[in-house]
Length: 91
Length: 91
DNA sequence: GTTGGCGATGTCGATCTTGATCATCGGCGG
DNA sequence: CCGCCGATGATCAAGATCGACATCGCCAAC
Image (cartoon, rainbow over all chains, first blue to last red; front, side):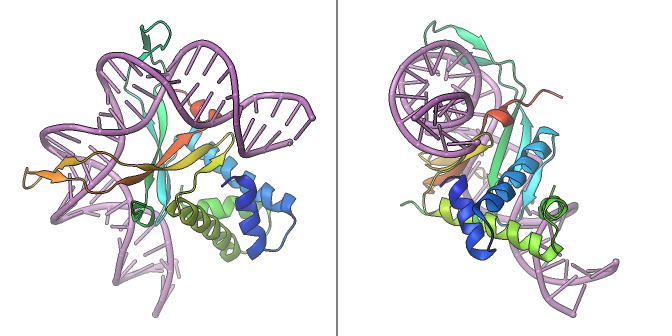
């Protein structure tokens, strides 16, 4: 499923041009990105939670050299599935 | 940031009632949930990717009993931040 | 059709997950 | 707008998983 599919679903419920639907999807992802980049936690009950977390790891591995490489970054985004998404069955 | 904030952002760009904005947000999250529950990968370039993954782990620990607890589940939802979200700086 | 983000690969260690319970807060009815 | 209901967070431990690096192919986005 890609952006177009989401926009498509939106168009079915709220009649509008594909361009508009795409803009809506884009706007929302943009807002989410912005919020996360500002360190805000995004919580949607029943769906999940996006949370910026500090990265404490400090080591990685370079495939070619095989040498330990430092992981300079200190943050990552974690998504915690909500109740509804945890209902996933093994299929 | 919670659902209302997202709806609020949407209202600013696409004038509509709060109820409508909330419905839109709800609809989209609903579609995403549905797609993930069906095992579909959701990819939004520049934002991130939601991917249902099989869980192979099989053990955990119960605080109270202190006993090893089986982790029967076999799936989880993983979110991989896209390029834009990986640009997070330590702040 | 073109551009460029994303997946996969291999290694090693830190991180995450799972379960139960109470408190807190999001969601929603009155 | 206030209040209730129910979902989420934290906690403990053990073990599996993820992440970063570099590069090429593939597919999303335009």
